[in-house]
Length: 387
Ligand code: DOR
Ligand code: ZN
Ligand code: ZN
Image (cartoon, rainbow, N blue to C red):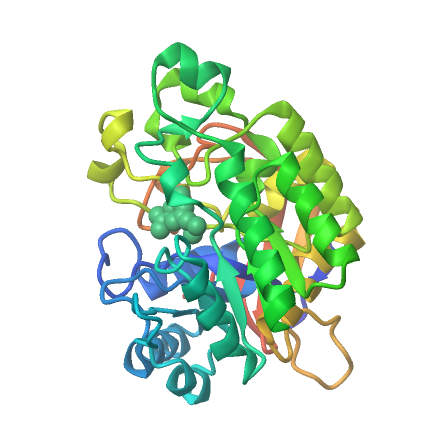
């Protein structure tokens, strides 16, 4: 079959380091199949499936189950993240080695809230994964500074009388764990960086030779906490939307490479978990189907920068062979074709995700994914999923 790519941009297939697929446990919000379809439509050929499923993905059994569901869906390479469940005495409760050597070949291990509060546990986790060159993905939240937090701690949280999530709750953990990773000599990856101060800490840690990488979400590159004034829970997310100053620093940090990658933190939620009062709504936003367009809309990256920060570098961080490369002759390509001149309007009802919690409803966005190829086979053609 011949595809007319006149006027289109060819990118190496996008790689998402941070996707919540909700299976097993919340198949009403997303399944591996529906999330894979959303990913392919967004131009992705690989996604790292986060471990906060039910049951938590901390055994070889669960990660192999998710990996097999991804293979069966056949639209995107689903790479499970393992949870580092560490006991309070420091004992290893998760099957780290078994997850690494399983069919799912787990390389990224997420703290998923289990060890953020205790540096002894984080040190143990870093030591465990060093043996097989794994990486700890750290959500960077000091929970004792975010008790009851509803949005960014700032002028708006004060005016609304809501408990705020201060920038320092993120920055304190990044600084602490960068030092721990340097001490242990392990790799550390910082999830969804959201503050200007975090960018500066990561810059300093890299200069000091610490093996640290970081990601930023599309929503933290575009939106600010001013959106919370509407009390529309679609804007509730962890970490919270921040300020204009933070957005500018995140864009600059990404362009410079201090922040290594864009990752969606695609967080589908069922209607009843979002269409309620702000305080009771679950945090999180959809991201897979809009990520590339949102990044384009910020005008912070060139096309090569997009290939680098949304494909090549995340592929390297996740240890994914075959992804993040420019197609070479004879090698089945993971690639995506984008129409840079097209625009589209986000209609929540038309998204492939089972959930509807996009903060971009009704917005006209630049750039349309026209085709995606996984190992040479089309998963999206003419802007539509092939299954
Ligand atoms: O807003 C968020 N939602 N942030 C996270 O880190 C987790 C995610 C979720 O699982 O819904
Ligand atoms: Zn998180
Ligand atoms: Zn997340």
